[in-house]
Image (cartoon, rainbow, N blue to C red; front, side, top):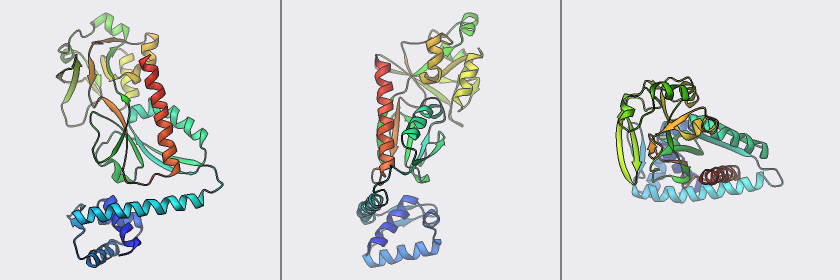
Length: 302
């Protein structure tokens, strides 16, 4: 067994299947399979369980993966120390952020970060997909959820508060919902998961209530949802950051303020793999973003 064999095992398990590992390593699938077979033969034990779509580590395979990851991280750190000696901070950070939060809140932070560290390449995807966040060669993902996955490092970026809101003209003409049940009859404007019935979770004095909703306008584009609310087309159920400027200047009014409302989750989390080596660029980016969220959350509590 050598270092190359161990790091190959790490690459295979990180990729999730042999074909994806071959693509990332720029090798043929047959070559990847051959080297994996040779490693298992030298150990004398099966290291991965193969299915038609995925590979999963056996118990000994997981132990060797952890050793291989430690070695790989040390090699990457050593290489980075040599290549960046005497240079300004450089590197690439590939991240995935929610479409609404990313555009409305994080865009200014990303621009500020880039101005501070012009040598760092930011590769940003705006998307809301949750499944297999780390399988797409993403360094960092930001997502709204109630409980983060246990297999990932989750840094809390603060609570997500939904508001029931409408334009003053709509409120004056149609009235605002006074109870949760009123939301069922109101023309709702919100985001929803395709193929799933929309469920609003509402909390009052630690009591949890749930309401099934049927929106009249549905979109993952929160800027569009904001426009629809401003146009007086109905009652918006959106995170407060979507309409924060409108709330300050009276462009929208809210209802059910005593309730804590949630659709996709109650917190924003920054997620990344626990064993993946973080370059200086990625580590700097993580701390910068957490500083921004801490500053914003402190301001909200004042």
